Amino acid sequence: MAEHRFTTVEPVELDVQIPVGDIRVETVDGTESVVTVTGSEKLVEQTEVTLDGNKLRIGHKGKKPFGITISIGEFSFGSGGLQIAARIPHYSQASLSTAAADMKLKGRYRSLEAKSASGDLTVTGEIEGDATVKTVSGDVRVDQVGGELKVQSVSGDVAVAFVGGSIETRSVSGDVRFDRVREGTVTVQSVSGDIDVGVAAGTNLDVDAGSVSGDLSSEVPLGSDPAVAVASGPILVVRGKTVSGDFRVFRAS
Figure 1 (cartoon, rainbow, N blue to C red):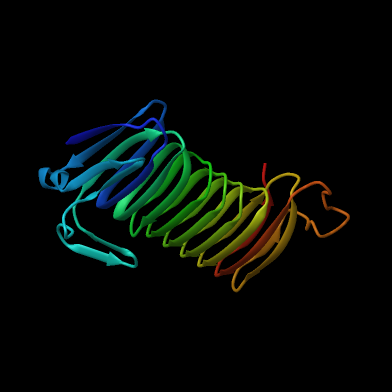
Figure 2 (cartoon, rainbow, N blue to C red):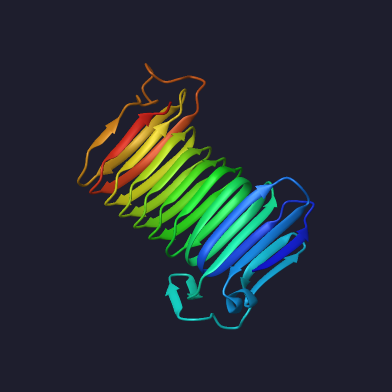
């Protein structure tokens, strides 16, 4: 095991690139960032942890990946197992890339970018700004995104409790659910999966959705109807299409 400590008075830009294993990140109060690397002696030695200005980087420092190479889309990493645990200041940015690792984040973040060929992503807390997630064979669970959300998922479910901005999601073989959305544009495409969109109270709704083989339903009246429109309320535009799945719009609690 190796532990790295850095003085970080301001939030950092965390960049993690590891092949396989586990990534745990937590934001905390204070002026210090701590990174712990656990694994075999060789893997720990080949993992570099550096702070350059406010950029905190964790990754393999060799010219070539170790072990068997995995290449999927934009990812090209070697096999092996690492456990990365990082504690960084609140409202830091996080960028995580892995071939096969579960990613668990806790706390308050300015923004998030996560890419995984195999592994779950769980965010407990708040992403103040935008979030971008690309995953193959992994579930996505996020509490809150204050800005825009973009998700591409294959063979995994997507569930987000609250999104403050627009949403763009493409999913293959997995359910997609947003518990509460207030305004902006929701664009959702799903193959073999259900889509559920919760509309916040006081929000007007404009929907254009279709399903090749599935049911369409909405508990929320369309805001374009003058009889039910909320004059001062925001407008949520929902554009969606699903193949072999139900599409449901409901009123969020």
